Image 1 (cartoon, rainbow, N blue to C red):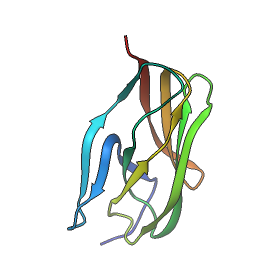
Image 2: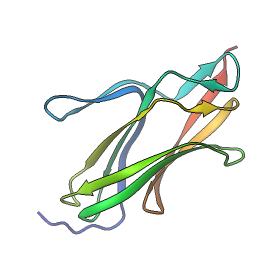
Image 3: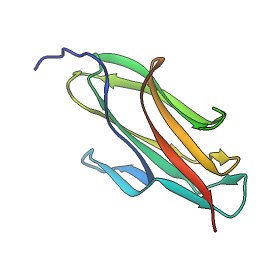
Length: 132
């Protein structure tokens, strides 16, 4: 197989109640969502997770980060990161990230940014609304 790669390709960026790795190595994505609801702010939700699947990275080690920002101001709410190892650039790399404690200061739209190195590879919104 060829390991020719160009731009990284984000295959999935999913919010879930839990992301698990089964005994056979498969990922389990449990309880996906796009929105949180809260009675008051600031709020910390029970632990949750983020599933990332990315491909088209050059073989080797790469730093990655996930940053969650309030969309209106760019205020950073949460940041996590680590390293991923790529054997073959054409094969997808899956990452499950547990989020045990993220404080949301107010209701509104938040943006999750995925960076590999310093390059933004993808993003997605997360809404946090007040319970009516």
